[in-house]
Structure formats: structure tokens, C-alpha cells
Image 1 (tube, one colour):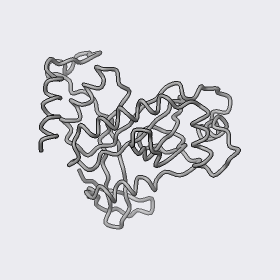
Image 2: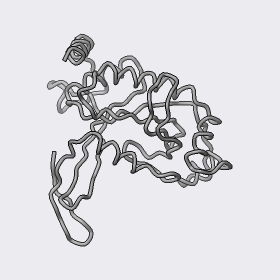
Image 3: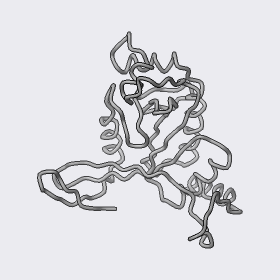
Length: 225
């Protein structure tokens, strides 16, 4: 994936994909700023970074979205890592994030914002401009996985997760850089591919027989490679 970038001063330049996973991850981490919305996956107020769970998983970004939902962001950029490991980290992170209540989220936030007196509710309302709205924090959780893996594989993974009701979203990550060094990141949510017969008709849900078997076979192939 490439493209053209146009700047407000009239300049333009070509975009080429960033292929170094370590560089891309560090750039994404630097894009997270205390007390400012981070909008790559969904608009959210970051409350922590590089948090280690009791399961040994490191959560690069933890935030609260506009509905008060806890969102944990993981990176899946080193595609030579076994997919089973990535899925295990995602599930353990979901379990961990579901155990975080408002007090714990506020504690993370105070450390991240360098403000021991900060109120999570006040910071959230200020960031989203929703001073008149009251939400409950720590009631719902979601894990977002930014991935560089092939689309067909991520489709099968997301179908599997959806069928089992796991609040884990895989997103394709495109990281592009111009000749002048400007970097752009785009995250696209994985959606189940529609059957050919459904094109042009109204479809409310998609279920394909054999997805679980294909998913498990792909897992075995990824593990053995």
C-alpha cells in the first residue's frame, strides 16, 4: 500500500510503507500524549502505557473511550511470532482489563498524567468535551490488536473471536512514510468477508461453515513454521 500526501503549503510527496516493526512500534508509542486524545483505533483518553499484567503481558497503551469503556491496545507487528502467542496475550489482556475498576484506572492515570490529584471523570470530560455527561468507568473492556498479518488470516481470527463473544478487535495497521520523513498511520477494523451471493443484498450477519477448522489449521501452520 502506497499513496500521495499533500501538505497545506501545496507540497506533495509519495508515501511508502514502513516495514521495520521496531521503528513502527516506537513511533506509535511516541504518538501517545498525556491528557490528549489518541485516535488511531477509537478516540480515547490514555491512562497508562507499558503496563505489565500479572500474566506477563505488556500493554503498550491503556485508555478510556468516549463511552467510558476500558481499551487496551496491543501490537502484532512482528509476524514471525507464533499467532497462538498473540491470541493468548490478547485473551489474558482482556481478562486483566475487565478486572480494572474506576479507582485502578484513575491510579494509572494519575501516574501517567504526573498529577496525583487528577480525577478520571474530570479528565475524561475535559478530553471529550462532555462535562454534562456522567459515565461509569471500568464496566466494559475491549482489546485492540494492531496487526501486520495477512488479511485472510485476520478475517478468520476475527470471525472466531466474534462467534465466541470475545471483545477483541484485530485492526490492519498501515504505517506510511513520505520522502521528507513525515509518517502516517491508518488502522482499519477487520470485517468478515461477505459471501458472493450476498453482494447487493441486505445482510445482517455472516456465518460460514468450517471457519473454526480453518482457523485451527492456520494456527497449527503458524506454530510449526
